[in-house]
Length: 142
Image (cartoon, rainbow, N blue to C red):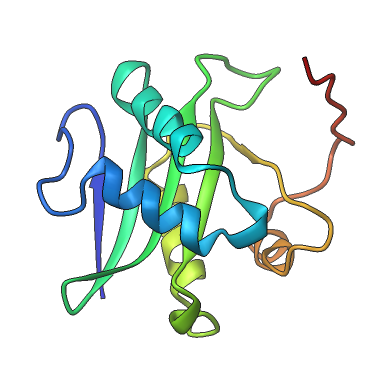
């Protein structure tokens, strides 16, 4: 398995393009995800504001992807937010998600926040990696 970091320094990957990564995330996030157009906005933020994309590759196939956006804040809000992470359904349970998360956390500078739904099986992985539930998130949708 190989891991690749994509950011504004490296630019869009020629093989694992933004569109391909967004399509992968839309498919493999299943009901926990967003529409491709919204995922593409998150990816564009990486190249315009900051953050990175980490991908897991096996036999030239994309098997996992995560997107972290830099918040531009420090201390009172974590410096990064992990917006998306997904592993190909056929690769789940093999440790790909854990390795991908570890690569992303190792690459991130500063603290990392993420949102996870209570029924998402990945919640256990995040807890094993040291994430804690500090706040109850509330949103006002407009």
